[in-house]
Length: 262
Length: 327
Image (cartoon, rainbow over all chains, first blue to last red; front, top):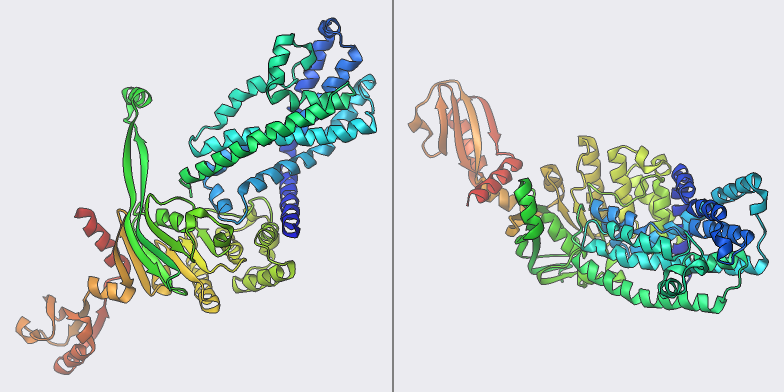
């Protein structure tokens, strides 16, 4: 346990230092995640939300919370893993007595930590531009919202890890992830709250892992009535389903690995 | 007991082939043709603890593929393999703690951070206590003549400095077996010499086993009493370097400038005449009898100048690979 803590601390410290080297790039990434704010503008002007029984305040809080959730659940594992595998950078990591996946996981966590001040500045600027948009969520909403964001991130990480293992078979596995972006965008709640979906589409969406990645934590933070136990149970169930799949694919992939570029 | 044991080790890759042009592209899309390539074919050898062994072969001979199998990066297609008592491809933590792979063309350290940051991660990953890690870093840094370079981002270091920091990182956990894939690649002559001296010193101090590939014969002649020669995936020599040199070039060339002109008959019994032009004569003399024959020549003739030479090892081994290409 002491060893695991020391490794985690060393990895996070070095990855955080690395992320600070890429600060300009991270600012651009953070700015590129403003889709929920754009959707807020679209929905606010259309009047469709009112027709769906959602007030203007509910709508703005939802999309602002979705913006925050999206900022801290971004996963880019497949892109960096694919490049590392092709360029031969993966091989030295595979020769160390811990899975390289821990490096990638801590890199993501460090990148999230480096985003905190950027997101804070963006929220302050938004508050100055449109003071009515900003509100202070309750302590419970912040607490459960934070846990829900971390859980949503883990779910998204595992889902992408399944596709990432395809890098052992294909040199262009990241293309599969781009295909997955379509259901992710529509079914996660980034473009519209799940409650506004027609009942059949909503049922379909809820049967996928996507709403738990954005809609669930966003509604929690926005103070909407949410079944917290169901949300966390769904995320846990999806994670438990994905974990053995990741494990099996990873092991099978390693058997196929040709240490290209090394 | 051998620390590395490879028995009939093979690696076969399945690759798809594409002809050039549009027709070739369409055929490749609709009716892909695959072919099997044997990168390593039934290779057997064993290495004792503490040995430094050179692994030689032209590009594409199968050296790196063999190293990848020995380190557990890739699975062998067939054969038996044991390194430090483990099956490498199982990649058990206990095995990985005992080995290291240094690749001259690849780095494991984080490019944008000082090496010291990566070294701290390595120390944690290998479970080296902080004080002990610092002691080892200081010791290795001194041996490798590294100082403030460890505090500079890796990208700001020269190639030689980067290679030395890579060596430091690779040896921090004191591996028992070192796999070195062209560790002096691209280094200038001075840096090459320093890396060789460091490796020889490290071997003496720790008794670590080393398997080294290099295209620089200086690395091999300085470090490796024993060499493995591989060509087109097949191992065809396993023995000492001097034995190989003796086999490839059993004779030394003796060039003399004499004060008088002599006939061919005068040189009978001293060696084979390679050339005879005026005062200049070149003889080929078996290495085993070189000193006594040269002494006899000096007694018999009035010698103005004398030069004894052997073909460079690069030439001998290069010639050997070219000969095998033709077979």
